[in-house]
Length: 425
Image: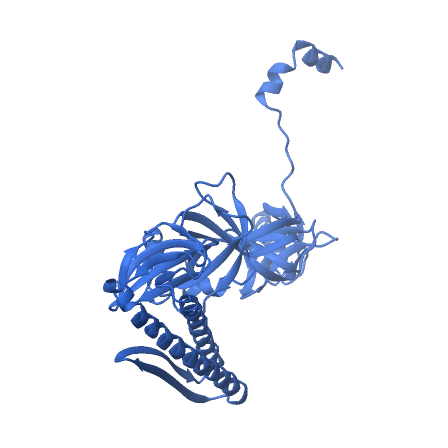
């Protein structure tokens, strides 16, 4: 009899313990419990930046090119590559027998450029009008100018083909036309400088600058001039182009500068960059392979200080600040839940000591942290514990006991009197 009583009591006790365990620890338990959390952080306000490091080069603010018929037109060179010249400075003397012929070419070029200038203005006006009034259409604008002066043909043309199924196509077409407009104005300035001479048989510089190159270009002699004003040039790929904006702050550093200087992004091209010497140099400095060979867009940076100590083409290290936040709070990105684009949530300890889920708005991410625009105030405690999601309610939280152990050096420095006093009292 005692044997069966013992067995019955054992079964009853085991059932009681098991039932209580189920009620207490099952997923459907409604009995509140405290959860031990090892990883937690009290957020504080601070200044944060998201930066984009870029290789860059010192470049001229503007480039002017003077054209003459050919080498035979030149009687004597008065400058060489690398020489500094002022506006109106004579670059080369023309042969007297060909001076009038060269002047006729310049006059023909001026007439063609003026005609082309009017045509591009009309193209831009048409594109802007169509962009405002047409949602889905296709536009094709093509203009070519051919001038003939004394059997000497000068071809100057612009061709803008645009698929206007989207507004972005109009924006790109207008940007391309405006870039062409700037180039035409620059060429017109150069030609007008040559024609401003009264009877002089010389090629003159239209601007103050440096003679960068004398080359043969399509059968004509080209004298390229860099302006004395310098800027910083870099190039953005597809993804980077989306991140960089006009007026973004930039930090610049280079050999030849005593300390780093500030700058701002002044121009962002909307059309792929031409295959210039600067682009070739950039690709050599940043040889990362791009799947799209056209995905290089010129970014111009205006330094806040003069960079006269740096020569053209000098390599500089550029740090573009694409995002910044002052006195904002941050959370470790790995601790976020329910992340979707710029929204997420995190477990935060409320005033009663419970872990509640707080919705967060994210301004931007750094390497390990997400910078918040809304959701938390400085001083809030964020916890990282996956078990909290298993509860249907907000559980109470307790943290590890803080422990402060003395260093070995402080133990040695205490002395025997210190230990004796504490042993006695």
